[in-house]
Length: 76
Image (cartoon, rainbow, N blue to C red; front, side, top):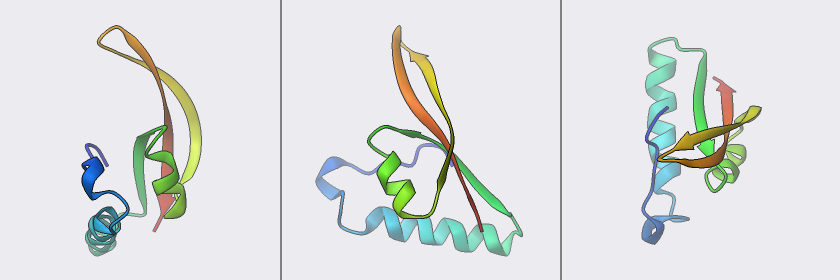
């Protein structure tokens, strides 16, 4: 999954959960066995709360800045 963002004013209202449920439903329909994302430090708890597992921490460079994110996946 890429570009899974929720504006700060709408976080912790269940919107991300509903979107993720729809993505998982579609993935199951398409017989996709795993979902994958590269989660930011702030997104990591959301994905962990929805049974994603950290596979690897990595450092990436964006616009000259080094950022930490997490490769995460979930079997469905």
